[in-house]
Image (cartoon, rainbow, N blue to C red; front, side, top):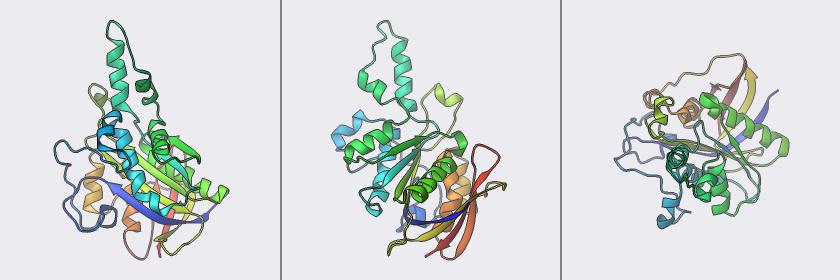
Length: 262
């Protein structure tokens, strides 16, 4: 099984040294660093005063979604992928359960589920189309992208893919350690348009995952954030010519993507 899908836009939220171009397009020259102390995601569609009601994970997802939304039609579906989900909210609930009253705000529980970010995004933008949330551990990027590619092919509609994960609070971070927040987005379509930047042909293969090629991607993956497993694909999307990337899936097969720049 294979088919052609077109990439309308892609974006990456991650730390780097200053660069005039968007980070997703400059991986070959960017240097991985760290976010400034106290850095927080700042999506434009959420007023600054209202952001305190959202977890860092949700704000990160919404900011990534914002960056690709202009390339998608109003009827686009959405796929949100996160390996760890709302860790900060879950930790607050666990701490509340240890207290004498075990009082938990209803909104706190609402924001603890894995589809909290996709729900908040669709509310913020008044989106009424389908939104799916994926959790695939270290293979979340490949699993989310495969789901989106199939949806584009079978439903003949554009799909936005959003990947996001942020460091978990203690003591949850002892079992799932990552050191850097990151988000990524892909706008996919079944039709080529003037803004299409690449063509993807995808298939399922018995091949190992593609290792990162750029220094930036290698250093980013060392932060243990599962979002960065999308970088071997982004390395090809950000340059001319052709190439291929294999992303991991949970199972015997992996997702192969043949990339042709347009």
